Image (cartoon, rainbow over all chains, first blue to last red):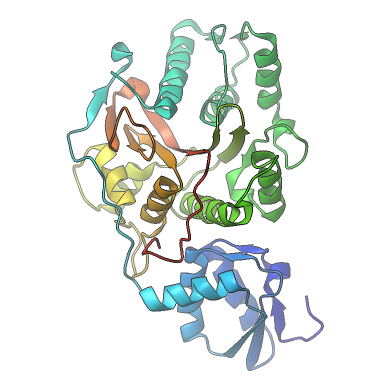
Amino acid sequence: MSTNENVIKLSSLIAKSLATREAAEKLFRYARNIKSDTVIFDFSDVDFASRSFAHEYAKRKAIFEKKVLERNKTVTVRKMLALVSIRGDSKPEYVHSDYSKPLHISLKNL
Amino acid sequence: MVYPQMLKEYLEYCKYRDNYFKNGKLNLANLRWFYPSLTLLLREFIVSMNVSNFVYPSKGNITDYFKFICNPSSISTSGSSMPVIEAKRMDDSYMEHIYKIAFSGKFEERTAVQNDIKYIFGEVVANIDEHSKCSKSFFTAQHYMNKGFFEAAFLDNGITIPGTFKQKGILKDLKDVEYIKKATEGISTKEGGGRGHGLPSICKIIKDMNGDILIVSGNGALYINGTDKYLKEDMVYSLSDSLKLGGTLVSLRLHMPINPVDFYKDDYL
């Protein structure tokens, strides 16, 4: 952790890969307990943020009671946070190439 | 009937399992090869059923490997052998280990593919974490240089994808495979916006990376086909109770050359 009390280094608190919603929840829970009206999230050494993390992070940041500053965001983290912000709740579409009835398999068929 | 290779692995496991239930002995004499899916399935079956009565594979090196994977200490993030780890505990050091094993040797585009894999693995683990209610979840992977593909598998003993829908009362009276299909189309069992992105995004990404995915959960199996020229399309299967999986298996194969995908573009996420 950084020596500054209101700076949270995410790679130390969570990991270099920010994968889960739970990780975002943990971050804001930790930030809430810091005795300062402003918290600084330091993304140095973070090499990846998943969409799940980014979505939960953005959601919680929007309603967080303290001022949040961010620093040292890598390109991949920037891209993911931007993507979540631009696309909002719209979902990717996966269209299956088959809509026929399921084939039934039993041990006897094998 | 022609089945996708990864489904054949699952069906082979079911035959071993059925044979054990009938004879009280796990007869693996004709086992010639382990891929990650079969590794996880057999390992979990042996551990959870406390199986001690075996006929070992007739090939010596397969027997050695079989004994290795059945040893609890083979859950590891070190060494050069294929490790089995608890999926929920997948961390940075483990991912580095996977890259080392999976992409040993010359591998162009390594960084881009690593990011793709990190995204895919992260989403699968997040799904297990948030939906499965499992007590155990495992992961393993291997790169088969000579065969020209990388395979990874995740297995949990949770309530299954159909079970999650049924428990929440969403989309009633479908066949199990239809629930799996709905999940891959982005129907979420969680309330609130911005959910249900994980499975459709990884299906699209893996397909475009020159890969295939198999999801087996409860009485359903879904095969997303990116490369199998004989099948040409995605396949959906209803499994009889003798082939049912009490949990969820997600297996994926990426064929060489892996095509890196920039998932920040083109509506992947």
